[in-house]
Image 1 (cartoon, rainbow, N blue to C red):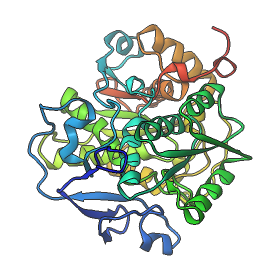
Image 2: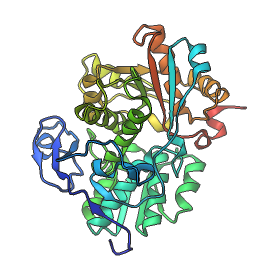
Image 3: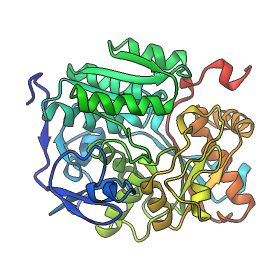
Amino acid sequence: MNQAGTPCALNDRLTGFSCIRCKTKLPIGDYFEGCPACLASGQPSSVRSEYQDLPTAISRFDARGMARFADWLPYSAWVSLGEGATSCVNFPALAAEVGVKGIIVKNEGQNPSGSHKDRVSSLTVTRALDVGAKRIAAASSGNGGASLALYAAAAGLDCSIIVTAALSPIHRRAITQTGAELISVEDALDRWRLLGDMGKETGSFPATNYLIPPVGSNHFGIEGLKTVAYELVEDCGDELDAVLVPTSRGDLVWSLYDGFRQMMAGGHIARIPRLYVVEPFPRLRKVMQGFAPNGSFPGKTSLFSIDGFTVTYQAVEAVRASKGGAVVVEDATVVQDAARLARHGCYAELSAAATLTGLETLLANGTVGRDETVALISTSNGYKDWPDQVGPA
């Protein structure tokens, strides 16, 4: 237990971490800037957890939600609000309309704060408590900040969320209602600079990236996103040919790859589905075409959850290792597809509905076959959007 009486139990199976790029082995610890060796070489890279004696079963039958996968995560007990166990639903009418064998929607909007970020926040807040941090801080465009503020409040931990003026009123209210400190700065780069300063000067626990070029979010936290892959394997087995993932810096797409990799190593699936990053302007697509991953890729979009001008090594590695790719979508088409998706029964945030737009593009150019089954990760629910963004009803 920590000082607030919240469980913080490291998993006995956790042996340390390793760099996803250079494979350097690292002891259990906090690597806010990713692998030290790669950072020194100017190529920041995230780290992954390493385990021994993983169980043969995917999940426990005596637990609920994400807790069913405690044996596979860096903490076996954590600050929980009931995250995980989101629905995985087959949409045959939508598949027939689009012209593909199958469409399965994984609805992460059903998590406590309404997005997949809750799977991250639960473990990140737990790590902060476990190391004795008094305050946790993050740079956010909305969903991540709302999630972290909620979990920090539940744990009795002070919280600062650094945002820009573009933050929607919906997310502003969600964050401030928890009692979290909301700090507004000029632009995304200022968010990262301030977060780095807060970590180094005041001891705040940084939950998100603050480097340029960036790494992923807290390495204890993003392990929770692997449970999306575990749940997909439980529900779909080897049925999935491809998975479409709304992506900015790649925490989710990397964790899906790593989770599927573990499931294949354990004999639970025979193959890893191809992972396709959905982005609002070319970033990862340019990297796949030969541009340096540590470059800048500016663009404009109303899809705030997948905005940003950077690419991480973890996103590149997930796509390459799964033999997937990147697909670019246009905002106006996404607005139409969000309404189309809702009419079939899934009310998704625009950034999440972009997966349907991406699928249509991949089908049109033959990258995804008409005889394949595809999963769309709906990362957040449509209540996160606001009228100025989506237009009139």
